Amino acid sequence: MSELLVYLEKHGALVEQLAQAAEQIPEGKEDWRPGGKTLGWLRLVDHMSIARRHLILKAVKEEAFDFPACQRDPANQSSTRAGAAAAQRDSWRELGAFLDGQGEECMGKVVDFTRGRKMTVSQILWFGFEENLHHRGQLWIYARVNGLVPPKVWGTEGMLE
Image 1 (cartoon, rainbow, N blue to C red):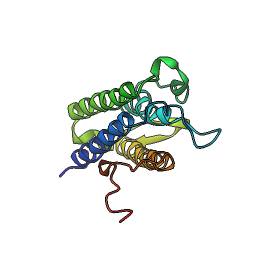
Image 2: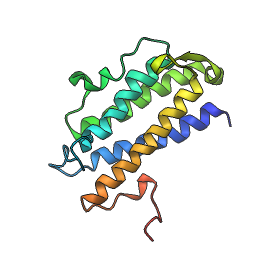
Image 3: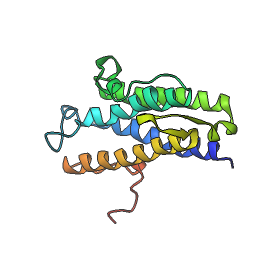
């Protein structure tokens, strides 16, 4: 299986887990945060789709991006759990459709990324995947601190058994 197909399969499954996590934020807890400088629960989910659409996708398309300013733009932010879940799925469909059209050869292409760095498309995509895994872990902790047992779909099966 090609690297691109592995990436699309693995990250696609992760994005769906993140969308389901957004849908399961308890009513009234959207702005809950464990500390003063951390992202609220909804913003934690939402900022991953913003980065996927306004950083990762633009970088691999070789379009100008304005990161991290795009994170603070209210026009990019979801205000509801359903909106954040939809943004996860929509931003993934956009990235996936672009990559499908490029094929495996795009993975080795070198493009501009943040802070003047040049990286391959492969490096940028896997960076985004790892970042999303990290945030899935944060969402798991947000849920546990609020007395919820994260659903098995989050990838935590058997951890507490």
